[in-house]
Image (cartoon, rainbow, N blue to C red):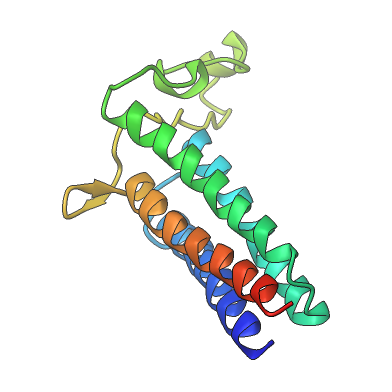
Length: 158
């Protein structure tokens, strides 16, 4: 039980750290997220909530859901990396400079603040040649392994 809580706390804390880092880049670093960046955040929020549920209940099977949440974020991140590297096309709403949903009147009115379209195929920040989406993939896969290990430890004792 202690090992389960330790591993799930570590995995959920990793997801929380990724969310906090993304928010810091956005609000402190001024790097507005694209649509795919936002989508990568949601599974981490789910993983944090699953970690809290496990801490409250000790119910081991939830660890599998935490692992699937982390893998979901990794999958979205992998798609995002492919868009950044031009391996495949991304979403029309964030790779083509789309102005979808913005009226011509608003575009021509200088009093209206129209948000800039954030492109999914442009790398805003990278470290060691790996973009934020790439780091999300790497870390999310590692977190998924921790989640699945926690689930396995829980079932091995039965």
